[in-house]
Length: 98
Image 1 (cartoon, rainbow, N blue to C red):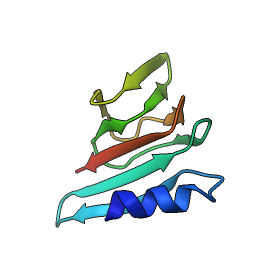
Image 2: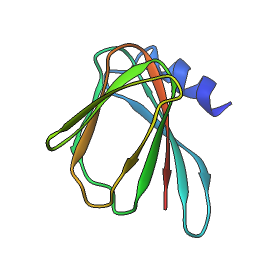
Image 3: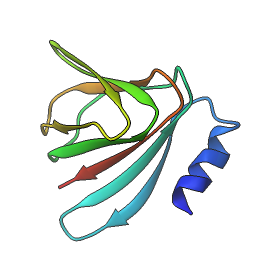
């Protein structure tokens, strides 16, 4: 139901919608929904993270690196590295941290 809730909230949203999917003692799994053109601005994660595109298409950006990602593409995001994610079309991504 988490993905469906994100999609419903996106209908009226102006920014990406994030929801916790699963949390443990040493990890966190998050879901982010985007409408085309939405962007998570530059930020850092305090733990190593894996980004997986569940649907749609996004651009992952970190200094000197831009990666166009489509459904089922994945990338490792190092801890403390500034990065951003922008939606080229409606998209859903899954982030695993820890």
